[in-house]
Image (cartoon, rainbow, N blue to C red; front, side):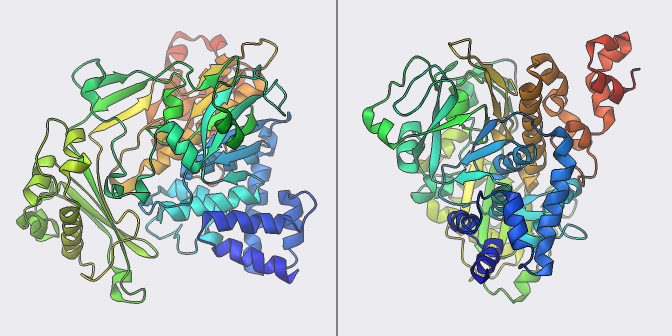
Amino acid sequence: MSDLLTLFKEFLTCESAIRTIEVMDLMRSHTDNGTYEQLKNILLPIVPYSSRTIFNQLDARIRLASHLCCKEPAKVLVSGAGPCGLRSAVECALLGYQVTVYELRSDCSRHNILKTWESTANDLASLGIKIFVPSFKVYGGNLHIGTNELQLFLLKVSLLLGVEVHFSHGVCGILDPAVSLPNSSPGKWRAWVLPEAEARAFLKQPDLFQTDLAELALKPGEADVSQHEKINLVNYREAAISAEGAISRAEFKHSPELLKSARFVEFNHLYVAEGQSSRLIRNLGFHRKLFRLAQAIGIVVNMDFLNTTGPETKMQEFVVTRMAAKWREGPLGPIFDSGLELENLEYMRGTKNHFLAATTKCAFLQNFGVIKEVKDTVFESLQPDNVNVDKLYEMGRMIANAVGIPSQAPFRKKNGTQIFDFSCRGSCSEPYKYFDSINSDYESMMVIPIGDALQNPYWPQGLGINGGFHNSLDGVWSAHIYHTSKDPALVIQERVGYNYQEASYRLTDGKTWTADPTSRYDNEIFKQLHRADIAANVPFRLTKRVRALIGFQ
């Protein structure tokens, strides 16, 4: 048992995704079937009292969702192990689904810091974040967390709940249940998955973090909107690449070499959490609605602490903007005098690093020498051959010095300094799609984009994670409603967050959230959604559940 206790302690503190999964596999080898209940019963007598809290909290979450649980065996596949993908995986596991997650990246490599609302922090606290990330201050703190810390926490909760997670593999396509393969019987929807190198080649997605282009890895997902269909002055429509080009219908037509390296994963429903530029979503018929804003270029600076016990670990966090009357008296003043005009600047302090985020325009980047010339579009202006990377780091250092970060503090090895365009926001024109097999004897399935794949977050201050969590949980609920009722009309009534954009701002306190939107959104949201039915006094259009929420008898 001492070996198991050692493994559990490593599991709590491990900072590598791959090693975390390996440790969980070793812990499960001490059980008969590797379930949460069996692992908990073996660990509880031997773990320190302070660590038992995680099991108490997960037990409470399991009880909370127990009345919603799926009574029929069902398999869920999640493509993407970012915070939203893993949060949806956790909720699916709580609902009783068998969950598998595939992530193209090899680790949790993002260092940007995300801000959470108090209700989101309460949700994370109810899942045990204080055990895994003691520095996260749920009460009286700054309510922010590093992206990689949040990913690792949700990864560990997922693994405890029995979710199967694989890094360095990407989902490349889908097989109709009617397709036969060697050693595979037809009848189930299957995704085909390739190892990272082969998947990146097939998807035409280079690993920018392993190249000299890392500084531009946060490239705009919408590129140049002028190439898309213009609806009006600010709205555009980006047509899907194909209606169902990612689905193999009659046969698997790819090369024998690809067939050898591919994995085939059965699923009933697929969640796509691959970010706004997901090729899978674009090849499954999802169009995008684009909204062009004023020119805005994001600047991110990540630096390690020079001294983990020095005064820099107590630096005050702040947000400053040029809209303030005395903006020149703060850090924006000396930055402006150096030839770079920033619209705003935010500093946040992580557990090991400094994080700076700012916005500017192309003309100011040219003044500082970061870009060589201002092109017709931001997309063209931020192409690699037009960016001076040395000047980009010089700019990052200058901003850091103005804030008070020690001049010897090193840039992080990954994501040290980056620039990207967020002058355009977009969202999928549909929150989900149903797909039928060519053989009517087989069940249909849902594809649900979640997180940034569904809707671009508003980048400044990292607040997108809050809305992202809710569109992910709404996606889980949509698939759950369809799987348990087979009623598309009921799914439409229940898709709260996508149908009413203010839903994420009218929330309960987060302590008892489930996938069920009534546990998360204020009842007023449901009244707003169905106000036409209320005005016309036609409650028969609504389910008993929704009628009760909005006050119909």
